[in-house]
Length: 371
Image 1: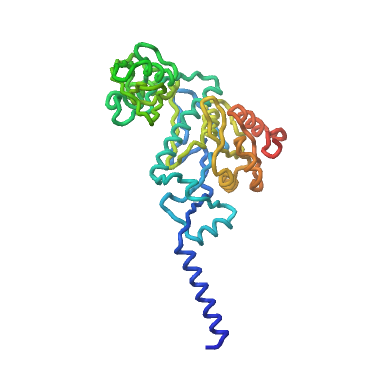
Image 2: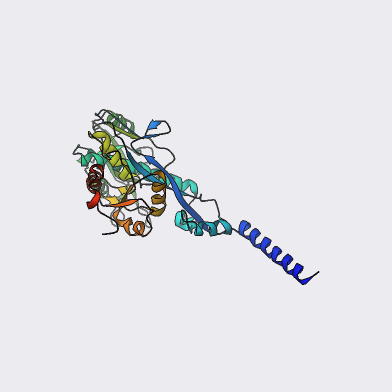
């Protein structure tokens, strides 16, 4: 065989081997890419994203789009070729698999966690929006979770409203722990509660739950190496619950959006609710997108995948992007052409910026690039 032919054949075999390796060899990486955006003022799958009843609402035009990131599943393993392509592509990011699914977390576990965060973000978005509009929101202490095989199992349930412990009214989740740990393990503690179903019916009717039934629970000794949310000292008593906070709204607000998880849509939900509950357009017909967690007090927090969300927003047609303060540096370093970043720290900041966008007086918008 001529040397040139042999060299070409050897090169072809090496190339084939490399291609096979690129396809067959798996690497511990996952890919993030721009996901769909959804207008919180519009419809999704044929129904309004924001549905408000029991309160006058107003038409809203323009866009207040929440943004998402698409990620590969926990069980999917990229091959070398996919990883290289992802690294070279501008509209995707390749990250270590453990970044998205730490501690061997399964896709099902991650989905469940994201769903819980999404649900909580909706609750906080409602609270923040109504507080911004000076609409009172009632707060109550509830059972968040019941520990399996604990004294409270089958006696207390998630969603039960805790009115009092041993006759003492509770106002904060921490009050429950303080009152329980006054006991010694083996002693009885009496909870006054409104069952979750009764509380849910009251909330739907726009009123605080009334009355209450007494439940007696025998406390147990806390495991030595395990915390359960009820703080105390040596031989502290527990009943095996975690207390949390729930809210009773003066009218019904439903957020209808499937197949989305995580807390990062909170800011845009809040703005959408504000727009629906106030006359005139918050956007002035402009296309605004954004992201950011939000807490009950209206503080906007950082999110992951900011650069992917910027690309998704730009591709959807957004002109302005509301950016959490802590994400500004990363966003400003790689902003898609035609997209103006607007720095926000609170829901109040966002509302003021929306007024500037609506009126076209955008020269003074807080910018990610100018601090």
